Image 1 (spheres, rainbow, N blue to C red):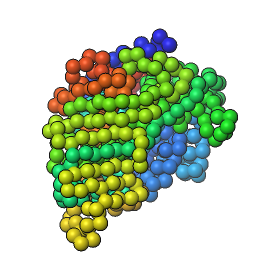
Image 2 (image 1 turned 30 degrees about the vertical axis):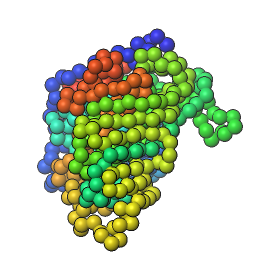
Image 3 (image 1 turned 120 degrees about the vertical axis):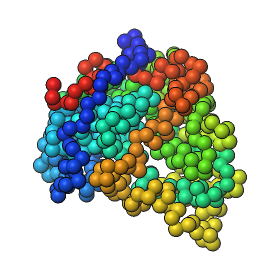
Image 4 (image 1 turned 60 degrees about the horizontal axis):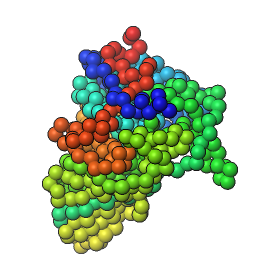
Length: 457
């Protein structure tokens, strides 16, 4: 327990060694090639295998990587009929010059390391949300993206694949709600578990490699005796309920709905630079200095009622676990509610008599050719962005501004106090302990490789 506690409290020592240019995939090769992009899936669990068939409409899968041979074999058979090359070490994938783009569908704690090393190895990427576990990881990702020029699409597909959200943003941008004063995001409750016993690691799973940058911990697993389909673990499928691996519901569904909420504030022409987060939360474990004191059950926030203030002080963003999953925008002239299944409110009804301008949606899409409400849209946008060498609809820079709010909310929950933020310096102010939580350490042997291209050591 002491080692784990110390590990979580330490600051990350991410080396800022000189950047190297991308050499394995020159831009000209993409522009002149006749064949489709060559693609590798890193992380062949449920999320990866659900998204990959969409990717395969645009790119050719040549490799699959996972640290669990069950996922590896099942994913390869399901997606390619067993024809793709398989790996348990993602670095071997990044070392291949013939792979143009990778999809990173690992648990959250691996995203930053693999993405940075992929960009340095000359790969474009699709990376599942949340992009990072910490605020400082986002700074590093953005710096590497600028240095390498790689195209990275973050898996916040509500920006492209669900037209209701962009229609809502267009309504706001057209002034139909007037000036926003309150935006409420309901993202659902976090996971709960009983005490989870220690268990033998499945022989197919490389547990040490699964943990990767996370602190060393024993494997835990249990089946609910009353509901055999319900399983509790600190590994596959349930990793997001552990602060060691994720940010809980706040960075899970928060990465979707808080994203749309902040885009909505900007669409209204109002300042969405956060200055503080405060509120209440409930966890199943006790905390000391932001560190969970029990390590045998889920430890992320189960319930929360948080408030985000912005620089101009004219709009309040609420982050809650209760209510109908979705986003409620309230202005001085109207209100609308939107989620993946509905868009309702008097301003929506008003479109029958006064439609939006013809270019309203195109402005929200920033002129990109996106077929909204199409599950293919996010990947199609990535491929087009790769070909044109432009930022995609969900780029790392705009994603991190939103995700930082999720991280600030998580720090607020863990410390149980108001957190103050300076957007210009991207720093927590007036709270040394809270500021230290902008970073995390990487377990020895799993630090980010910034010095050389992977495979050329």
